[in-house]
Image (cartoon, rainbow, N blue to C red; front, side):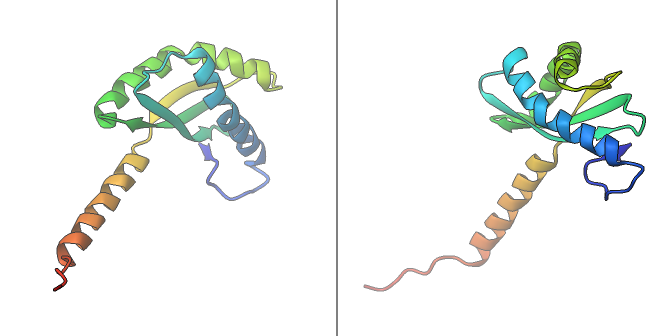
Length: 134
């Protein structure tokens, strides 16, 4: 699969361009056509597209309370609405055939936040604030 993160080459320029367009349009489509839980924010993080443009994996992250527990439910919801998302993409992308879509939870932002929290805790424990004498 081609990813937007891969370097440019003549072989993957078109899939990269189409993936960038999908990444641009999907958040707007989700806001307008998918009834997401109000207590969560869903962020589209990346799109991977096959070289033949037939299949796209749309990665998303969840921000909010108990995000890890709710990620599976959000993934099921998004995949149940992939026909609507594909239809809306077809209205925006000029292509003969449009890729089949699958939504995949991307836990990278949640893991990064957890690691940052651990580093902060270690820093705070190793550098206790000294009480100043008055």
